[in-house]
Length: 396
Image 1 (tube, rainbow, N blue to C red):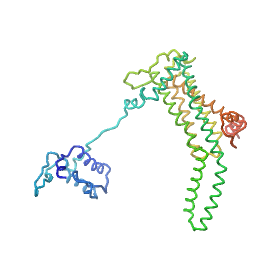
Image 2 (spheres, helix red, strand yellow):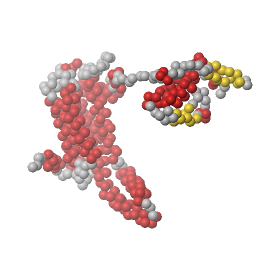
Image 3 (cartoon, rainbow, N blue to C red):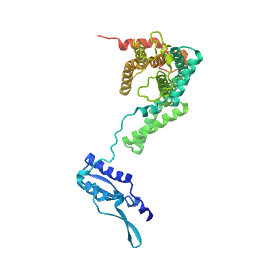
Image 4 (cartoon, rainbow, N blue to C red):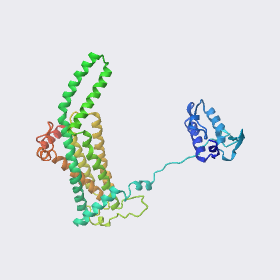
């Protein structure tokens, strides 16, 4: 304890002490509770203090400001013990108008920090780039065909099995609904008996009922191995893969404004290996054919889900409308990026649309061992056209 008194007050201690009071002054607090703490005391010596006004807070700052003066401290002998004693001299905090922020650092957006997290050496982007170049070298196709083949391979071997698994989980959960309704009805009867027998209050009975029902449902999910969260696995895989391939194509087309380092992923072959009306895939599509096609395909996928939903809640309607707006916003975004990126987005969305249509047929579902459900349509395409005609046809 005595030897610790020799520690000199550093600038960090001063900054922490001043910053605590400057925050009070900045926000104009008239009453504030805190912990008064001597720099050399232990945690057991903490005492509570309260400043009733800004003037008293400033006086406390002046009182303890001498602790932040390294050259104005000495040690005095008292009964053989060396004790710390500050000199009572003036400091920069002796005047009330001398308060100022000691640390004023403004945070600004830096492109270097952005490219540090989305750099070409980031493993998902690096693997996506190597995959595309491997497909291009192996097949010998032009870049537009290589991007199409690579997209189909990734969607077929990664996202398609996950989509089938998601449909399997959703079907199993739907088949459990009749059993859940029976258990819920039986639980309501048992709760009513408990209310009469033990005199439970309604609020307590409601809490017990909800807790027991959640436990029963969780046990059913564990029994059939079909927790609904497993159906979201497709989203957690497909979205990162989409971003990784998009950034890989962005570096390959050298669409990196603000990057002050050499781009070793640039492929000038994209300038001559384009698609029909887009011969140069390093430039945006001036005809807007690809961006408009991208927006229409995404809207079609969303409307297919919207037509299938029954008894939709307000939250699902809000989410659906937000995704619709995002699909429309993707049109100008697709017209401002290189054509290779927009071409990949269009191919991926088109594959998703065809995948959703194919997975609606009962024969395909039985082949993939997806259980039959009561809500399954025997004629999916006819039902979709009928629902679309009913929803979008203008009536007088």
